[in-house]
Length: 386
Image 1 (cartoon, rainbow, N blue to C red):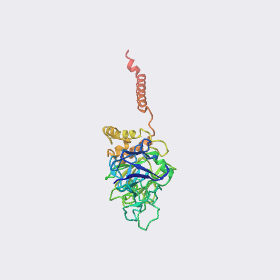
Image 2: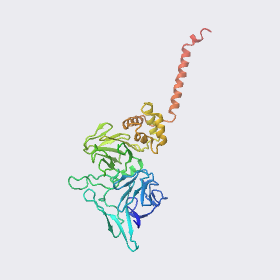
Image 3: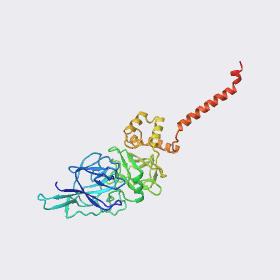
Image 4: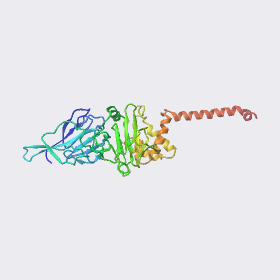
């Protein structure tokens, strides 16, 4: 298809709506070295790339590239762009536009997909419009089906219809900003696709519906199964069962439907038959999680015989992220085993430098002291014969 391709970037707190021409070799990311710079903290320095076709690919971003109808695409996978396709780079929303030129070059038309509610309106093919509008994507626009698109539970809709979805994380602005920096994530052991799911929205729905922020492909999971919320004022998470058929548990305890329960870090959430572990790089008191936390948890598991030292070394060597994420995702430890050990490590408090050396010194001190006392008590027996 001849002509010029563009990405229309939706207006956000990071800037007004704008349209950027794309061509083979266009790089996308937060760094100023990219062809297309996205000043969004959730976007990686080098996030994605456009190549001939045109096609888009994720070049190893932390928070992913999400495409309408596909969800999050695997790193390195090439996906062909289509007019009207909606793409989300982490939290930044974009719309693909193609300006086609006639054979004689005399006229051009911008092709865009009509924005319709996918729940209540039939799918429409691309329809021409005389000029692309740089206005932000309206709330009623169809969502990119991804793990992070929140459900507006209170939006108006026809009786019996599922909740309408919105693109990108919405809700408490303070909560969203906090989540961008704390590295909150779910280690989701979805049998269909085990993965790490970043939490970037104040309210996140877990369910089998493709519009759920955290999409789980299981017949035992309800369309809208559970909800995870982040409360910025207390830097804490809450979980709530949404009246699911097969229930939700938190650290083996079954939740009462529609009643929120606080979730501590490294807790296990079970949605139907699927386990997930909530993790973050910031503790509930706002302090950074110690850099050696995962190492200490792993050491405790090794001491208990629940993890092999060789396995830990192998995971540490090959892991591109936190050691705990790799151990859980790789099936080396069960979620509940990790959660129990993590809870014990937190109760013990921060590790103190030189703790092992001090313990050894204290041990030898008492050994020497015991020998000295023994000599004093039995010196007559020892030296009496001289």
